[in-house]
Amino acid sequence: MGFQTTVPFDDQRPGTSGLRKAVSVFRQANYLENFIQSAFDRLTGLEGATLVVGGDGRYYNSAAIQTILQMAAANGVSRAVVGRDGILSTPAASNLIRKRRALGGFILSASHNPGGPDGDFGIKFNGANGGPASEVLTDSIYARSREIEGYRIRDGADINLSRLGEIGLGPMVVEVVDPVADYAALMDEIFDMAAIRALFAGGFRMVFDAMHAVTGPYAREILENRLGAGPGTVINGIPLEDFGGHHPDPNLVHAAELVAMLSGEGAPDFGAASDGDGDRNMILGRDFYVSPSDSLAVLAANAHCVPHFTGGLKGLARSMPTSQAADRVAAALGIPCYETPTGWKFFGTLLDAGKISLCGEESFGTGSDHVREKDGLWAVLMWLNVLAARRLSVAELVREHWRTCGRTIYGRHDYEGVATEGANALMAELRAGLAALPGSGLGGRAVATADDFSYTDPVDGSRSERQGVRISFADGARIVYRLSGTGTSGATLRVYLERYQPDPAGHETAATEALADLATLAAEHAGIARHTGRATPDVVT
Ligand code: G1P
Ligand code: ZN
Image (cartoon, rainbow, N blue to C red; front, side):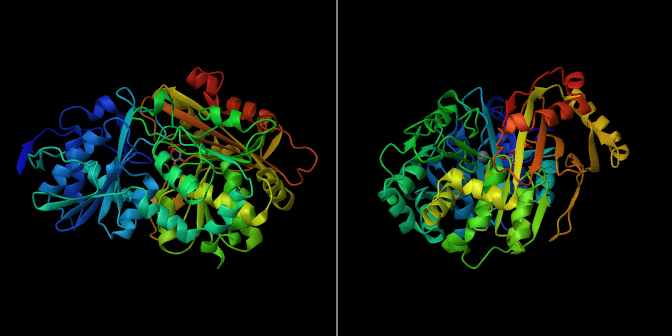
């Protein structure tokens, strides 16, 4: 057992989903150690506790886990539950924390950001409920990281994480578990697996793109082995440290290979992809893209087909920039729909309090009360279960939703890596102009309300201010502006656009076309070119 002296860092403030930095930053001497010790110093009940540790397998995952285990042992942890080879998808880690009644867990991932020596790395602490730590705790860890003078670590050889079973590490037991088993068992409990199996047996075909990220082994086991989807259903199924050099981000831009496979005659019935750590999902039908906001709404409207939800839904929640399609379903079902700030942790209190059953974000995140993270593969299985029960194609199901609730046309424009000063000035100017907007016209559209979103958690009363500028128009359209909290270089401006079409029948315009006017208006109103020097967004989803 050793105590190592160090000097503090001042850049370890966690963002929307943990501490996320370039690998080169994490590899600085004592950087990882300082952050982990800061967490250990601010956690209560560490002595004798169980801790879950695992990550998405990206570069630096294994090295970081070895360090964390030696530190956990030196800090009095009794048992560390680790996925074989250090692998755990984020939702699988959330499930293990809950199932093992652990104090919490460290999840190592930079989600959909690229990996490899020149890519990104990240660490997130999730608490006993399986969800991201509260802001109070992360702020306290951050404060500690700026004053810390040393850390505790065992001085021992790396342990073999490739074999299942228990290994002693000084006073601590390391238990290496199959990363897939408990998660797959949970999916068996939630879904009508027999119905999905029958769907595949009847000739239904799908492709799942694991993007060389963590879900490969999960998807192979569940889709191919348990559900009988044909071999080859899972593509890019081997997790790689650099994700094959790609962005493991399931959207129309980064999952272009999958999008191409789903188009044209002979394409499979269903396509899906997940991200680096397995919490995101993209859903495609043949020649049909389901926007994540619509996906949440359609799943909510059809949740009664799924055994886990046969008792009905308690409520829904969506992040503020997510489209209002879910609100319309909630209204029809007579249940509440909460609007929360961006980031999964805000759903956690609502889920814990039993106020909601389903929740989602426009950024390809969908989830439920089964864990306290968004869950990519769960969303795919939810779709499969609904398709198996309804016997409709993806497009038919979404069109049915548009007919009953109207179509909420949605798009997001990202301006990545822009200069921080410009981005901040843009937001400041938008905020300064808010008060004058309501009742006036913008680009010929009547503005109904305009504000900087703030949120009071209905369960614990905590306040979150300055969560993004939103402008709502009288015709149901909306423009939202916010800066990303997950980027690792410069600032990323996100502009969210939404239009409501009560009766979409017969005029199903593509989203980009239908939103073109609103996009121009949003860019002009915020002075995006003036502040960022960018004429067009880097990514449109
Ligand atoms: C992004 C998404 C957000 C999501 C987060 C973590 O955060 O927009 O919805 O919760 O990643 O996956 P942002 O970069 O916008 O702060
Ligand atoms: Zn992710």
